[in-house]
Amino acid sequence: MSYDASNRPPGRDPEAAPSTGTAISRDPATGHVRPPRREFKARGSFVVRCKGCNLPELNCLCPYRVEAESVARVWLLTHPLEHHKPTNTGRLIRDVLPDTEVFTWYRTVPDERLLARLEDARFAPFVIFPDDQPDYADRVVDIEAVAGAKRRGRIPVFILLDGTWRQARRIFRKSPYLDRLPVLPLATDRLTRYRLRKPASAAHLCTAEVAAELLRQSGDVVAAETLDDYFDAFNDSYAASRRFEKLETPTAAMQRLLERTVR
Image (cartoon, rainbow, N blue to C red):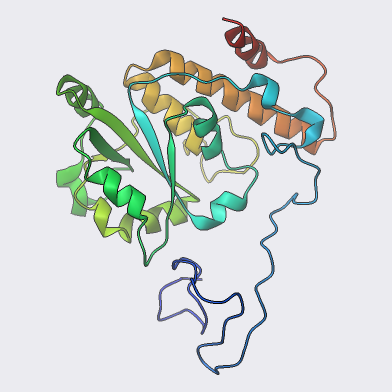
């Protein structure tokens, strides 16, 4: 069902900014008092999870967390529902790259922190999105534009639209403050290794995979390799926990992360 106003039933827009009023709201159509909404419960919400990494305690990811440095930065513009999903891979980027920033997207009210960052002359932001529509063809650039930003002394920033494919398209189309930014499509033959959600196509990479590939193409190879290994460790740990299987021996990616922690 579309979230356009013409199709939406009476009530608050789920993609509008959260209310700043009282906890109990009123139905806008009838004026009747409504009880507070139930807490969002994602699939697997009753699993005992590590408070550090949010993975099932059976296969905690914390021992493999390694930070890396990169010239380019990542900003995540995240759909509000994505924060509740333990299978979200955007948080892996923040674990590895401490300068990563996360902004929650609401259709009606943009994040003031993001607007301020976009005005900061230190940064050269690029919206990561496919070049499959003609109406923004004049904004499309390639990875060489990232190198050009570096040569001019600016910090390249990859703005990743963190959500389902449908949500990402909505974020791109419904965020006027992104309209003046260059659009950088990810050009790669890489296929997804993500096993926790079924993509529409093997060519649709998850958020962490997109970030790793962009970092690699723009020259931050060590950061890309670290994020790739951390993603693989996450993927394997979570998949094993779904089978109620304890990983007794670190995988190859996990072993590489452990070696990085002692350097």
